[in-house]
Length: 128
Image (cartoon, rainbow, N blue to C red; front, side):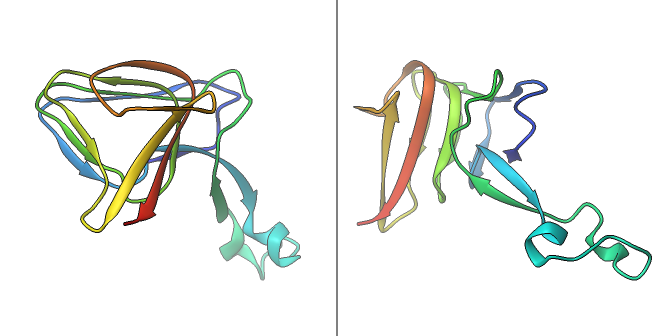
C-alpha cells in the first residue's frame, strides 16, 4: 500500500486478525511520461495515470497511519515510511526470513515492540 497524496489526507490502515507481507509507505510520485520525456497525446495515451512511486518519508501535513491488533502480523519486505504506528500486545512486525528489520522514529533507533509511535517512522529491511 503506497500513498503519494499526503498533502490531501492521511491514509489510515487498521489490521484486525490479519497477516500481510509488503510495503506500507508514503512516497513521492512522478509521471512516467515526464520521466520518459513524452508529451501526452492520442498516440501516447498509455502514459495517462502511469506514475513511478519513490518510497520515502514526506514533509506534508498528512501521512500513513498503521495499527495492528494483537492477532495481526506484518512482514515488511521493502523499506516503509509511516507517520503513526500502533503495535498492540501480541502483534508482530518483522522481516522475511534471511532479512532483518530496524525501526527509527525521528532518526532515533527504536526496538520494534508493542507501543504507539508517531513522527517520521522508517522501517528498514536489510539482508542478514
